[in-house]
Length: 441
Image (cartoon, rainbow, N blue to C red):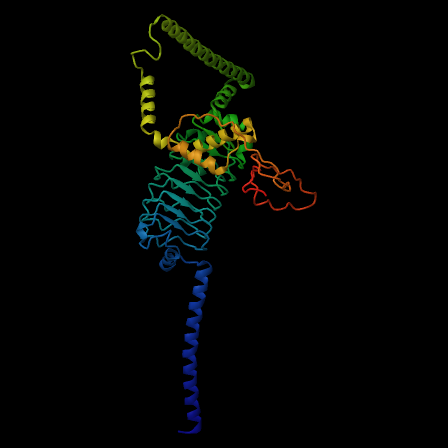
């Protein structure tokens, strides 16, 4: 083999090895990019991503998909709603703030009650044929131009579809609401411009109770906006920002019949009815008071003629029987109802009041008080005569006077300590009362 052939063979071998390395590098790079993309918001709603979502929060999700009744997939950036075949027990799906352009993947979610798809890119209402139990549907901030696909949802109660493109086609865009079971309808900030929507759609909705219509061009074209809608929608309870009261409905119907004068007359009648109702209530209250007073007078008069009193009456009333039962229960549970802390506090307060009334001469020491309290708690004692003796403290710091002989009277001390001097120690042979202990020579 020549040198050129050897070089070409070596070069081919090197290129082959480099191609293998390049392929391996590209596969690793694609895998890494896929992981990063799935981490920051994937564009595919895959089984692996749903599995990762389940594993991320074991307190919120079960490992078995069919056992979960809630699913939170908002802010994922997914473009298609799919891979929900195993979520048969799903009742609430929170899928707002994604990139879904249509409603799909709910064929097995027959128990779904609430569906939140606001802030997506949905252009048409469909894909809900297999969700007959759907109760609440939220489609705010999408690109829907027509309300349709709701005829098979016989349990739908609330439809929220703000800030879409509904109404360009006039009444035809909303005529499908007539046969629906919707009770709360929110179509604010759409493009509804035709005022005939009120009599042709809203007035024919039998279950309509709440409607939000402000932000649409038709709100300025409907004459006497609030009164007109209230008079036409007979079951309406709430319109836009405040409720519809019965008085408002009566006034609106009167205005619809005869204009402003009829409305004013109807409001005067409403006011008179309120005043009459108030007077009836006051009269009923006064009659009740007089009835009670009359019964009391009759009862007192009968008691005067009766030979028995309340205490000696042999007939035991229900109230008296209950009172006797309460008293019997208190006697049986006297020890449990006894409040030792309260009794101790009352004794302390009584002793303090006694000292304040009789002065400091009859003060006793803390130990004596505790002994008295303990003895009082142990058993009651008969009252004793008050001790009239007084304990007199005399000065015992005097110098001992000279004694010439034995005396039968005790010697007392009359010495006063000098100012700014410490008192001297008491003589050992002098008692606190001034009595000598030993004979003085």
